[in-house]
Image: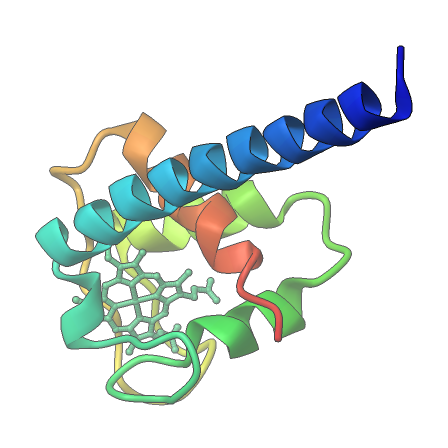
Length: 109
Ligand code: HEC
């Protein structure tokens, strides 16, 4: 393969990866909005609930964190972050809950 072709291939690969991530991001943003998460949370500031980045930091390196956070989202959570409880989100599918939990864990600064 010529040098130019290699560079072109690398560039196309990067564009492809970039747009795949952008799609995931868009789907996740819609899921967060539609599920009402953003009325209590933001990525970087505490609102009613803790900042998603602080949740990611607290759980970094915990291999069970997707499962733990999924439980909290589904059944609600109290006492882990303060006195305000999070209500349950029992109408969300387990698949979407796991996606949200995994996304939250990725919000490290
Ligand atoms: C009515 C406000 C409210 C809504 C809506 C809400 N949260 Fe929360 N969330 C909280 C509060 C308050 C806490 C802290 C609970 C505690 O101290 O245990 C929390 C905690 C969390 C945690 C950390 C749980 C843990 O085990 O440490 C995650 C993850 C989370 N929320 C994600 C979400 C997602 C995803 C959504 C949308 C499906 C959502 N939250 C919707 C208020 C809310």
